Image (tube, rainbow, N blue to C red; front, side, top):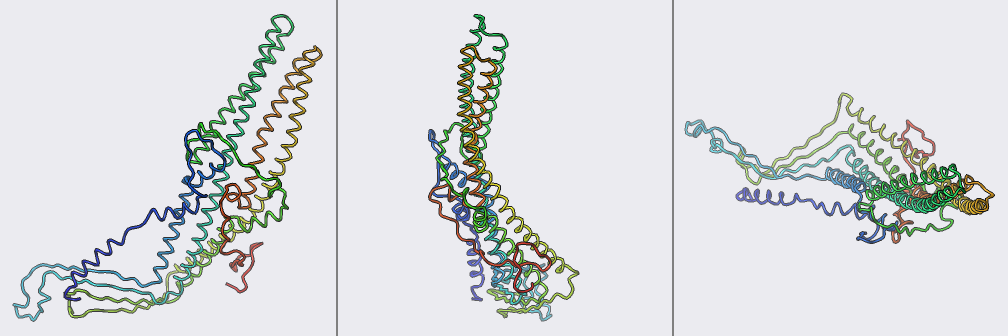
Length: 491
């Protein structure tokens, strides 16, 4: 090997260069597959856009999910780097020395060897290094990164739930605004006809100028409301296009989501909260973050302990003195005696991060309970409001019919008829809006319990059970947060 050392060295360099490729498509595909909800969705020209398809489009093409997915890739890379620290490293090295030509030193009788008289010297070979003892810091860091990867996975899924709820809200905002436009257009047509009629009656002396002014004012107010509703439709469609990454400007929305009666909203609060605590993605991610930060505390504490490192070098070719030596080794022991407080400061910072993550977990759990209770109340209230608004519309339409009949018989005033028309329009607008509020509230409650994706999109399997479910949380001895279990032994 020493005779053919330079050739072997060149082959090894070529192999090392060829091993540097990274399969980026595979890495991107890993988190896209996790975030996607079934087969890839498309939207062709002329097709209607259902809520389910809008949610699929948002899950597969939104950049926010991709950005969070890249955080997962970076966590996986960090774990790979940390794991590599537990294994020996082997490097290919080469040293090329050149110096001034001063002639053959051996000719002067100085006794210098032929190797010393060379103007260029080249050494090449392999260098291996392995850390035998690190105070378990590397192992703690690797365990921390395992928890961080788990945290990042659940954060991607949590962001997907949030993104899908935002998409559903934008979707139903468009539908509600279009329903308002439809109601206002119908009302504007009726009022335009009434304005034409009242002007004709004024011309023959059967209506007062005041009646004309009142009807015209009402027609103008309805026209202004119609303009506002049309603007709201355009803006809502723009927001929907942003979330789904497709042009939704002229696409007809077909909905297709019919929440089952009694689902979630009729369940006891405590049952819904318990369900949310078990499967809310942000709670599971916060739990993993606590475990990651606790392992980092152990990693920092491990820096107080000695480290033992062994280095080995094997030469494929060697021209420096002693040129006949094939390998060398070095064993190093390092024990920190005085670090000017640097290690102590890092340990303090690690404990602080751990306490922060505990507080974040505690806040997340309380936020989940708040979200569930608010969403549950919103859904219950929205259902009751729909029932009352349906009754109000029927009563307002009957009142308008009576006012029209009284005015035609000369027993009522034009002002009474206008007031009745206003009540009908207000009730119709409220009912149209509230019917979509019920669907949004239903989806919001599902988001609050962590089951939005699987309940709103057909064929999506339930999420996997969290890795740390049911495991008691470790806790710092310096904090005592309510609702978090204490460890069985002191830290």
